[in-house]
Image (cartoon, rainbow, N blue to C red; front, side, top):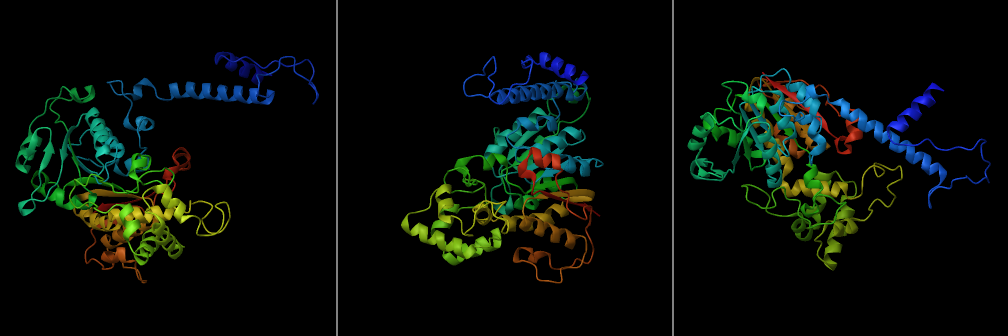
Length: 469
């Protein structure tokens, strides 16, 4: 009885009226004295009321979940609380921050900056941070990341690496084309604090952190850090993060061609503008329409681990003879269902994956040469760490995770595999005489059930972390 009274009180609070009932329970054929609106049954009315009550209570709980004490002095919520407002939700955010919690981070490198979800959180939680270097090929993400980092008090400096004499770099900014010498002078000058958040303005004498946004693939991490600010960051970085997953901003944009669920041009280049040095020049459309059947089959087998790679390569070659394959939905129709069974069957993993999933993954990896970049960046990322610094890597499929696993094993001085490693793991077959790191994650860290339910794209994520000796 008490529970019923509480429910009625809550309904009145939410502006709902208790459902009217007859003095006796109606039979199956009975008609209610007050019929519901057209097209809605009495049972639906009760369900809608319950749903509205649930939404009202959830809104009330959300309004009290973040007290004013948890907001900064500018009235803004911490970056983690703003994730729902961002176009991309960072995966394993709290787990990564947990491994970085005990570090004194004055220099931080983010190999895949994206919308600066992880980078913004590091900047917020580590007020001692002075230098942040973020790499990303997506110019759309640059604007979002720059706005977020500036809001957190950083001075953003865009950097466009270009091949020059003796491997020099140039800086593209609103101030014109600057040399690295000018960049060192600019970064060492005491900045104006008028645009800093109030909590930073109150800290007298604290230098404003500098955030370099590098228009480059993370494969150039070693080269950029070796020349940025006179190379002082090599061997002095406190924390490095590589989030190797696709950004939701890229997947959700149909004109990028990454998603088989949206119709758009078959591009799949991370840097579609082609302005960054060393980026992909051949799009997925060119690869699909001009590569040989054998080359396509190898791509699907090696980079997609696709069971039906022969059949799919044959279908694509046959389909492009009729008309060029230029859009994502064209490719999906050509691929069809090579397994010959429905997605709801229990054979293999067809119940979980769309037939085009592995094909699109393989094409994206081939177009952007992703595996080579991953194998190249890991030794450079370890070398740039100071003793006690940490490298965290988030992977989203078995190919990347396999590379990270064997790269970390080699750097830790562990014996190589008894069996033959895939070709993309070949650089890590040799054993080092002296270990460089210790592995902090014996097994990869996985997203919690709550995170997987809130963000389905996090389900395949794995986190591995090492610490420099």
